Image (cartoon, rainbow, N blue to C red):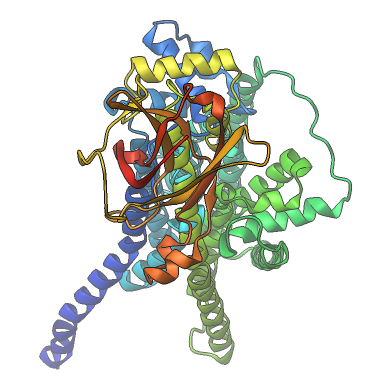
Length: 583
């Protein structure tokens, strides 16, 4: 009997091993997808808040950086640790902002590992079950809906904050000694506090775990004292800020709160209707509060489910903070892609919470248990369906974001020789005053942080060494005509990068100066060209049209031969388009 009983187990072992490997590979796929997205859609150009980092790096290069510069607030956040990361990456990979994007992916991957540890500790069952749950969590954790954060290196602080809250909970729930658990959680909580604004919520989140696990009163008191001391350091020297304007309607706060938490399962961009994320957020909050209330009421399983209760509380606390701090922008502001990285933690906490509660069911074969399984299957299926429905919108956003950033990079490339400051400011969200911007540009040039570097001459040459191009694979300069008042000339045509399979970042106009072509204007408008999309049987040509006006004063006196050139910003290449005009 012993042999016959052991034989099936021996035969099943390879099957189980293969299943575990399959689940493991499936769990890795979402991270691989994000790596591909960063590689394809990331644009290596400073954007938004990254211009403030250039000022910081300029001080470092001139040996003027002090601790006060690290500790200074940024939009109300203490980002001491992210500034250290920015500095390290600037030294290791100068001018490579994609390194920051991939660092965000690394941080998220470490968060994923921490969540797997929490699954192993809190959810009963086989390795296959843990890996399947991990795969579902990773599908959300590495969701493309966070596109704004994935493609904006400055936002690594958000992923760092998520890692810190998960790391603190992993430490405090480990089987290590009390001193090691407390010290580990303390380090993560401090790191999170000085990484992002909602990092201060790590302290109450860990306290939830301490209470649920019934840690000794001395441990709880020590944690409170540590939190108070860090908060005193946090507010020391904190600059006074103007009070945030209150919402005109009280329920706008509720809309913002629920929209913030439901947005990870909705679609981007934030022009989408508010109703869907608000309803989804309401369902998620109701489900979490209901399960948490039942656990507290029954006083059963609190120790096991504590990590997920803490994570859910952290996400909802973050939503409440955002609602009170950003409500003046309106409830629809909660749907911004950059907020989904935090909001998604609530969905993940519910997955772990439900799995942990189900695993504690004393009667896993009864009718009640079967009803629970049906509800769970429907919920998981709904998440997968929403993920699939939203995916096309996310990739459309990725394409638009890349096009937008590349246009800014093209303008930045010509910023030393053309008057393109307004384009740079509008497209790259530059808020610095002219003097500060000039210093930032000098830092870019001096530290060689822009690839390709800014052009120091307006002379342009074809990358393929084709002074004239007869074929239209790169587009065509179709028309140049005067406007109604006659002082403005309007150029138009279309352009395309055949290797990349999409329109270029911009088009630059040049006039013939002796034997050289000298750039004098850069396009800032695109046109929809359904005729080209139909002609070439590809939707990628739809946005390939361009049109812009320029003053005659930009040209030297007399008749000038004018040409148009397609700019491939990421690679620093330029291609002359067929067609030319005299003016």
